[in-house]
Length: 338
Image 1 (cartoon, rainbow, N blue to C red):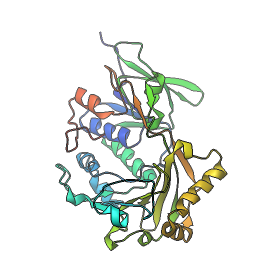
Image 2 (image 1 turned 120 degrees about the horizontal axis):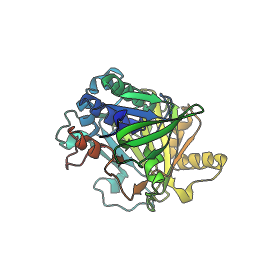
Image 3 (image 1 turned 90 degrees about the vertical axis):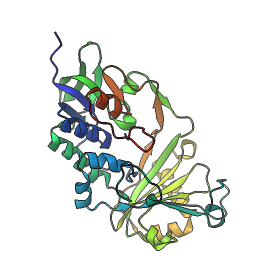
Image 4 (image 1 turned 60 degrees about the vertical axis):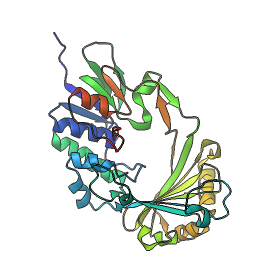
């Protein structure tokens, strides 16, 4: 006799991947639960979506919500570099002469993507809306619950263990999906996490209000594109992402070896990088910094194993959705969009 479980699927992490998986499962009538350790809304990086996400948002009937909340439309991307920069060698047509290049998403046909733009998002707002949407579709959602470990000792169910205040608690599920992002709950628990030796990157970032995006736009239509400004330091660059009409996210990304250890030296490093691109620096200094600098690191990694009979790690959707017979969204090459 099969053991009694509380849910078919337990999802650890309520960000876009966990919320999307929960919404797919709930729409298909699969009983699922999401455990999110933080209380939404909360700030987060990763504020610019890619066109393939349109398939997911459409499948989940979430595109109307994106439009109602007026997330900025993202029609393409721009790359810039200093004309005299020696840090990068390339043979990109159009970039060698003026150190600028841009692409429009409409230039590439992507089956299943029925609009020529995607979105820039305030992740606090976007993640909260998507998690609420999964809940409205029927997924149970618990915020402020930090999962401590997952017990695979029993063959018929998985035990997800967490604390509610001082009390230890657990939930039985048939399958567990790890959507904890770079926290990598299961990969760490099972000692499967592998650090990427090449993309050992860190970021320092904040928001600015009143930054004039025309400062780096060499065409009028490009003001609301995502920008990547290359720096005269190898493997280092600046992101520029519109959050609203007046708020812009700016982040410096570099190798760990360049990342200063103290908060004061990191702020100095941030502005030294900004100052290496004078037009950008002038416009940013005329704007208002809205938040203290935040730091992100250790976010490029792999796992020795991604899935098993009762679990799925990181690339969460395919195994779980396939198990329950739910259609899997895929990109132009047929790879899962998660």
